[in-house]
Amino acid sequence: MPDLDLWMDSTRKREFSLISHAHSDHTARHNRPVLTRETANLLGDYLKKSDPILLTYHEPYETTSYTMTLYPAGHCLGSAQALVVSKETGERLLYTGDIKSRRSPVNEPLEAVHCDTLVIESTYGRPEYVFPPEEQVLETAYNTLRMWLSQGYRPVIKGWRLGKSQELLHHLLGEGFDVMVEKSIYLGTQIYLESGVKFPGQVNLFEGIWPEGWILMFPPGKRREALKEFRGKRTLEMTGWATSGSMPWGRSADASLPYSDHPDFNELVEYVQAVSPNHVYTVNGFPELSGRLRELGYPAVHLNTKSQRQDSGFQMKLV
Ligand SMILES: [Zn+2]
Picture 1 (cartoon, rainbow, N blue to C red):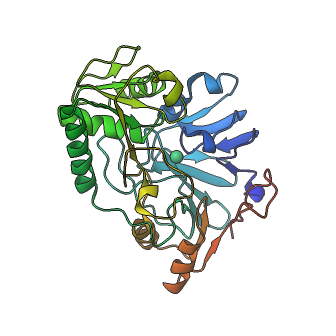
Picture 2 (cartoon, protein in one colour):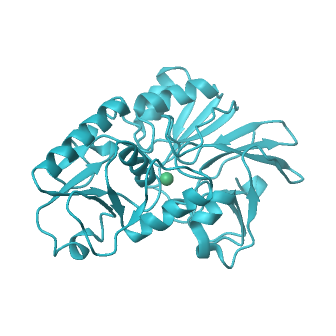
């Protein structure tokens, strides 16, 4: 928002920018990042040269021209939406960052924040992306894992260091599975523990020994090389992309189940209805969401990165 000299999730270094959460496609080493303490803890040394402004949820940050307040986004530990209220006009702009509207055992639940202008992610902003109930998907995952274990296979669950991995870990430990996690997932999980999140079982670090009967959680990129000595692996992938036949990239898993740390298409529409904005901009995903929103009577525009220079960002105005 150039009028306010305010960046949201810039992926290039800025003097002053919001970091909504600790996923790398939302971060850069800004001089003065605004973020939650949990996000700062998850980023650790990454921000060692920064002078961060740490906010708790609902704590207003005041400047001469606007007030910014962070609200839970439900997407991962520390994830925040930002409400920016103009002191000149009273206009309320809500930037969601990444959200998850389904309840998670490890995240603060998403809070719907009323606003005039909404900037919302549209990762699964296409009608074909509708996820089944999470309990049903998890039940299928448990059955698949038990079957593999009973057949003597070694189950690997693909998981990145932060977010979905800790959710799935919590669910699996709650079901009584023995789970080991790769180091980056382990370190992320330690921050959850330090922040007061409780897990219903022991969180174990994988250090090269893989006892029979244990499930291993591992990031997709490092998996092949690091685990090549182990025979009889079966890989489970939990991703929202599994709902569609037209996946945007190829997959390499023995089973893929639809589970996401983002809302599905219907949940995105429901969230817009819940915050009842006058204007909507959709970002970071498919343009079909803004099409549906226009049908429902919301002035909605999709901001497309493709036609823009990589560093130009999206320029928003407080009306
Ligand atoms: Zn994210």
